[in-house]
Image (cartoon, rainbow, N blue to C red; front, side, top):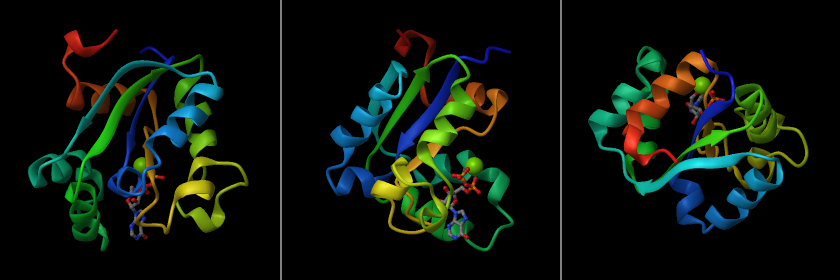
Length: 139
Ligand code: IDP
Ligand code: MG
C-alpha cells in the first residue's frame, strides 16, 4: 500500500465562498503535489456511498444534503506521509477544536460545514481516489 498519496475534497461551502484559491495555496505551501484535480458535483447516490461508514450516525442525512448541494473540488495529492500530514494541515473535524493556522480553523463554519475532506488512512485514500478519478485522470 503506498503511503505518499491522499484524497481531498474542497466541500461545497468552500466553493460557494470563493475559497478555492486560498485553500489550494495552503496545500501547495505545505508541500503537496496535485496529481489529479477536478470541479465536480456529487449526486445523492455518490454521497451516500462515499459516506457509507457514517450511515447509522444522526448527521448522515444532513451530511449527504450538504455534500450534494453544489460543486466540490476533488483532488489526489502526493507527498511523503501524505495522509497524516494532510490531516494535520486541515485540523480537527470541529473548527472550534482545530489548531491555529489549519484550513478548518481558517475556513470552516461548523462541525458539519467544515470546508474540506482528508482521507483518514492509506487504504481509504486509495478507495476514495478511485471513487472520483479514473486512472487516466492522474498525472
Ligand atoms: P473527518 O471529516 O474529520 O474525517 P468524520 O468523523 O469522518 O470527520 O465525519 C465526516 C464528516 O461528517 C465531517 O467532515 C463533517 O462534515 C460531518 N460531521 C461529522 N460529525 C458531525 C456532527 O456531529 N454533526 C454534523 N456533521 C458532522
Ligand atoms: Mg473521516
